[in-house]
Image (tube, rainbow, N blue to C red; front, side, top):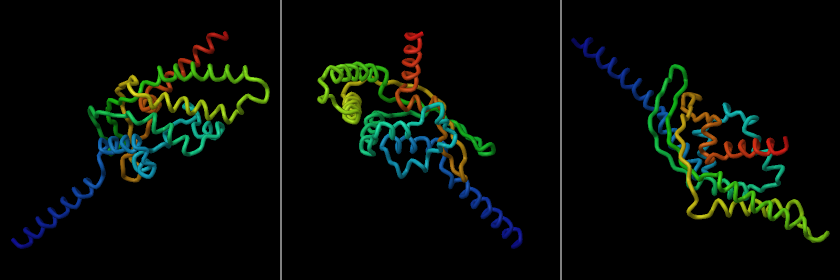
Length: 215
C-alpha cells in the first residue's frame, strides 16, 4: 500500500513538473501582443525578446539601415520618425494556433495603423515644391544636400504627427517560430506592410507608376 501511494505521489510530481515546464513558455498569442506593444512603444530592449528577424528578407524589403546611413540620419531623427509611424498602432487578436512539434505558430491579427498612402502623397507634393524652390534660388544661396534631407525629414515627421489622419486596418497571419524554446515573431512582407500602414504597397505602386510613365 505504501509503495502504491509512493508511486502515485512520484507520478503526480512528475506530471506537475512537466506541466510547470510547459507553462514556462509564453504562448504565441501573448508573444505577439507583447511584441506589438514593444514595437508601438519603441522599447528597443524588449524587442529582441519577441521579434526574430532571421526570416525577414531585407533584400526584398530594402535595406532600411543602409538607407538611413546614406541619408545621414541620426539616431534621434530615426527614433522620432519611427515613433510618429507607430504611435497609432493597435491590434485585435482573432485566433492563434500553435504546433510546438513543428516549431511553428500562427496568430491571426487585425492590425490598425496610419494609412501611409495619403501621407506619402502629401509628402511628395511638399518635397517637390521644396526642391523646386531650392533649385530656383541663386547660386550660393541654395541649401546643401544635408539641409534638404533634414527639411524632408521634418516635413515627413510633421505630416505623420498631424491629428485626424486616416487609419488602415488589415487582417494578417503573424508567423512565429520556436527559438531556444520560446516563440518569436518571424515577420513576413505582409506583416511588415500592415505594420507600416501599407507603406510597402504604396511604394510598389509608385514605382510601377514611374516605370509606366517613362516607358
